[in-house]
Amino acid sequence: MSQHTLSVIVEDQPGVLARVSAMFSNRGFNIHSLAVGPTHVEGRSRITLVVDAPEMEQLKKQLHKLVNVIKVTELDQVESLESEVMIARIACDPVNRGEVGDTAALFGARMIDMGPDSLTFEISGAPDHLARFLENIRPYGIVDLVKSGRVAMRMVGDNSKVSA
Image 1 (tube, rainbow, N blue to C red):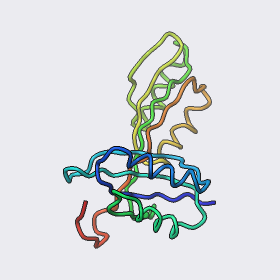
Image 2: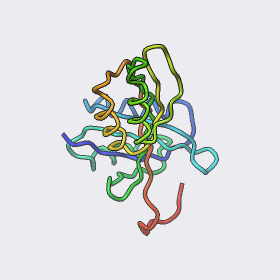
Image 3: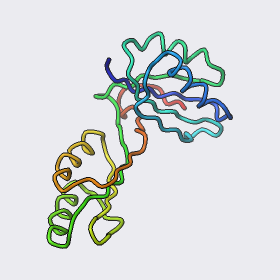
């Protein structure tokens, strides 16, 4: 199955997120990433989902039928901006601390904590940027890791109307 990114504009009401996620769960589809936040329009939120599903048309139709769902858009990776935030604690001793810090700095990671045997970094960007960071930092040893859900929107210049 291939991954799809959906942007779902909903009314900001209790239970909406539960109904949306339950719809995917009830059909046996895994949600890889889920992020929710307010839009620029009062009383509306955007749910960004990354899901494994073979065919999205039927799922989009089902989402439209849910109460409080205003708009459903499947985002093409080429025509959209995507970003995630990650915090990673990397093993290091005083001997390789500079090397770990230099590697992280190449990716724009910001050190947010320093322990006796680890450094913790915060990094944000496109999913492939974070994946390259992990690939380069993994040899030092990843002690702990957490990622936010992906947020995404269409790029400017896609000729779409401005909407919530």
